[in-house]
Length: 405
Image (cartoon, rainbow, N blue to C red):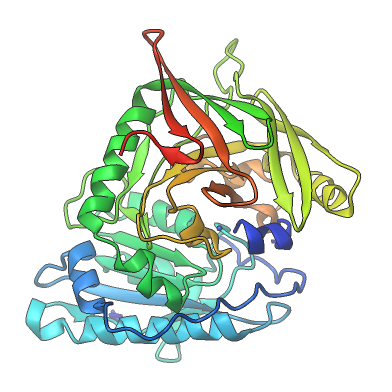
């Protein structure tokens, strides 16, 4: 064998924003691409080879695959996407440079038509050296996958790792070259230390109460759930989830979604979000976004989007970023790693919840999307208090900053 969406408020994705194979998702409606990040001054501080060894610790005999998605149809190309494909080629070359030193083999670059939706199903086939190859066939014989993509492949990659015990993967949706000088250049031992401290706190908690700088409050029901850490460590033999985001640096948990008979979710409150320059409020009951409040066109857009599918109303994640080098850029891949809180709605099964692709009425609508609240953002977290089963509580964020470290 050869070795190797529909948009959710595009303006939200730009400002706040972002992994079963099945039929490829049809092209999404054309949207204006997010702005290209401003380039940072050139520097020699980033060592890609060191990062690859520190994160993956490739072992002799392991096979490595780098993959990227391609624009097509209504999914039009733009500068940042083209740059991301260039990065995929550079990372592929960097792995090739480690072949003789580490005794690994690197497959040719895998490309595939973009899905048009974050965490939507991957197509059944991609291309390697211009020849079609089924994802299932190449991934079953691969150890390390790195996906530098426009649309997040995190959820389908998690499903592949659950099927193939040999596989571990790093998902890098909307990664930009700037991140090589910020979040990707972090001390990942320190990132892992903080991620596991936060993971332990979330794992012990039965609830979390957030107070936003707008004065609105939200309660997250954390019963019946396990927390996880995206710690930037993806060694062979790693226990637990074998998919991480790069850049890494967060702990996360899926709020209880009310799936137990007679046990409704206690998640409720009002979540403020900035869409463009407009404040829009999401009213939540029993872990569902039941209403988007506001008279602006942005609020109407939010209502229209949630009306597309009931599964989009699901509160799917409470996350805590902990990468000390991450900065707010308008790209959720890095923004959610900034020290602070974020939450997500939509699909949750890939993170430990119950809402999966089968709960959506159309594969094109499958989505998991984050909203972030970093220090210095338009909306901050004034207070985040975790409540524990023994009746005690602990404020872990105050005025946008952690109290734990």
